[in-house]
Image 1: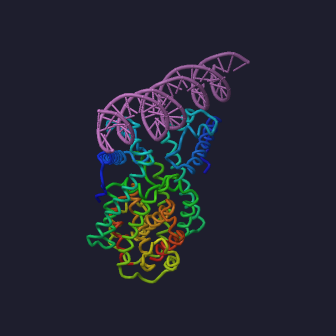
Image 2: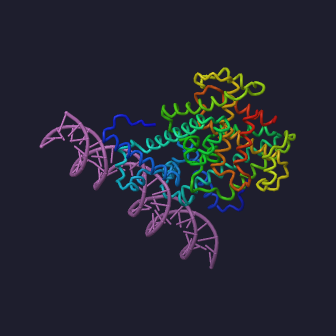
Image 3: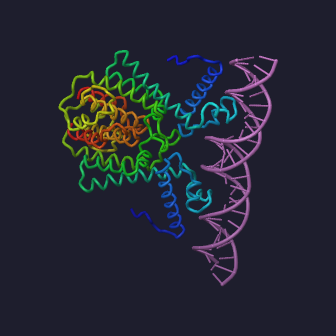
Length: 215
Length: 215
DNA sequence: CGCTTTCGTTAGAGGTTGTAACTCGCCGCC
DNA sequence: GGCGGCGAGTTACAACCTCTAACGAAAGCG
């Protein structure tokens, strides 16, 4: 993780200020959400004037892009660590859930409502496929699922997205259901659609995970 | 749907202008998303001055709340019509998918990233439970599912949210999985997370629905 | 030591939400 | 019919936002 190559003092200072900006940005986002993120407010909080921040981020969108990058990176690292510690697909699911509950806004920054004009830069899609690979590995390590469905054969014909991964189409299918089902539970839970309903979202998550592991 | 009681001409005009404002708001939101909705721009588009709109909506949040209300109402009506036309749970699923694809921003307004400070007014939660009831009815009409799980018994102890509905806990469970799984597929599809992956999201949706209907 | 790069400042354009005060027109009432 | 009042729409303004331009100052580099 030490990406610091030859640091001139200027670059070191610059990286430090950028980090402090994103730190304040995360704080502000945790209380007001991504849409209310204000460069002016961050600058004021850091004791500098508004336009000074534009030395470090070309625009507000640029700052948000950096936050998205950090969020992706954080999730990829979390899953990677869990996988390295020997977690199976179920373990990865719990790592994902813990990561999402730690900071809901961070989760929504990655998987929430997209901004119409915005499109993710190339490196975030690279991290995204890193995440996919980790999950696909865990899916492929599980015993083969039941009967092949018609969607399985559809996936056999459209497996270019699983960049060179040699998992059988059943594993691809399991990855997609893993992703969509857990995202369904998590996003509705984090958005507060279960509040006041009385049941425990963790148990719904566990029930869905159970079915994913056994089917 | 004729909620027009005794209309004084003033009230009629007022309702008309309000409707025209929301019409422009939907147009603007379809192109720029909810966060970019501007009262000023709407006013300019309607040929009036900015502050004039504050006669009709107390604030920008108030306008968005109205849009949320309309979105909920639209979904509830859509499902209700499908149900009245004899659709089973599978038919309701397709009605939901069609409704979501018709206007993704409308879907995200209901089920997307929540705004931190914002909380839905009482009437939208009433419409929300209307939607829940329609889906629960369809779940209860299906033949009983397989073995009762531990989550089923948990739901048996926490069924207060299913306001007076007499569906067995298995049906409650099926409703929750229906909701979360289809939302998982739909929201990721609408957010564009499947673009470039090659497979057909409609077939993933169908596969998930198949498993929901048969399990 | 001097040159250059970069940082942070202030000033300002153009956008937004929202408030205050004012004018004009319509509607009902006597 | 005349008149009072209510409400719609207007301009002016405050306060905030993003972002650009031009300037001074401080720091590193040769």
